[in-house]
Length: 74
Image (cartoon, rainbow, N blue to C red; front, side):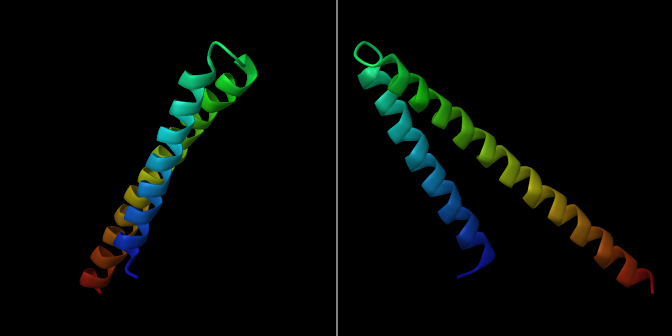
């Protein structure tokens, strides 16, 4: 499995987690506030993980560009 495919798989799983948590939050908002808040928290955390993974990928791409540029100079 390629790195890109692994990232797509992670993104897909995060989306599924986020959608399920959003559904739980909406379905329990009037019956169990604690569960609803937990669902909302999971949505927020899934989005934060997605953002951090994207930032990490961008950082790695930039680091790779720097390494490749240094190799070209040598």
